[in-house]
Image (cartoon, rainbow, N blue to C red; front, top):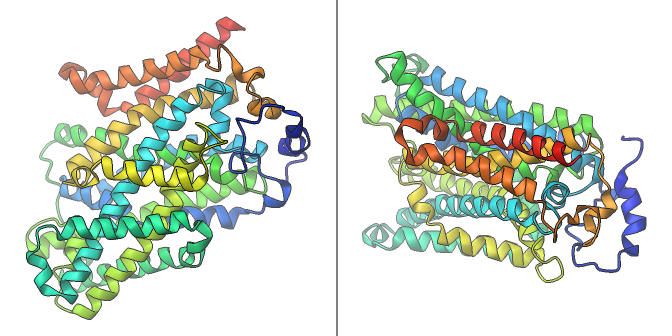
Length: 473
């Protein structure tokens, strides 16, 4: 273990802070007793979050867009290796100080200004909550159709399935994560079983992996490939850009830095690559079997003739999607919303805010096709999250040399108060990174800036924040 956890200091000193508006039980540093997660626990967390329908759709979306199997797998593998770097770096402060992401952001953005990156991250999580709820809702709707065929002609069926599954999520939010804990250990195995079943089906019906893996790329020239590859790589990084920010929410419970680093390295890239290969192989097989690339596993399952197999598969998808959604898309935004007003917003209230905004973001549009999913949703929000990562990593590793005054992070008038609670240098660096990345969305000759949105935003905000803070010193 680390020789000294700074949160030990905080536990004894926090009581001396008269104004406690910046702390509640969810935002307080983790105690020594809570530091129980070893390498296996961190790796298992990533396996559980990686084995999900969006991962499958991510891989199959690249195939539907024109890549062959090895091009898609290479893109996904490279993207996850790249995003592992900020993941491990941002996790360091969580493990050392026992603090969640919104509290870490106070060091660079200010005690009030930290709400800016926290809310940007929270809104993205709301979108992911809605996406997972829509996927689960469509599985629910397909299940109803099998049990009650007349339901298929009901035009509001998909919407009702979505609301039923959404309500199921809300039930577990209100009753606390402990109420679903017994299901969480089953979610990933259920989904993995279904995925392996689809892989076996693809192997049998496409006459082996030979025809599947021999499906050619649709790109006729290297230029065509690079035009698709560059934004796709950004999308792959963007897929986990959310967790690369709020990873301290989880690593604050790690035993030591070795556990969080090894656990993430073992759990993230291999899980994404293996599960992505299943999505790639099965989607390639649908081209052979059905004459078109079917990137949505729920749509694919609905084409099967055996109702028993389909029912069991859909129930497994529903359970897996439910547990993944609660773990990955409720915990973090609930903390982010709580950071707005720790005295008034609890985990349950933060979770309910997440659920409501998740509907407002219209996830059915984000999943309308692979292009909207990868090039619209993933790249779009990465233009906001890359700059946040740039500021956080520069502040913690370059400006502060991994040294924080943990107690002051909870003091409304302390060291990180800056000017009225805001560090304008961090906000300016963030805005510059976002604006430069988004210019490419509106100015065609500069489209490459948007294609590289996460990378451009990260680099600009990192360098600019460093320069501004050096001038202050």
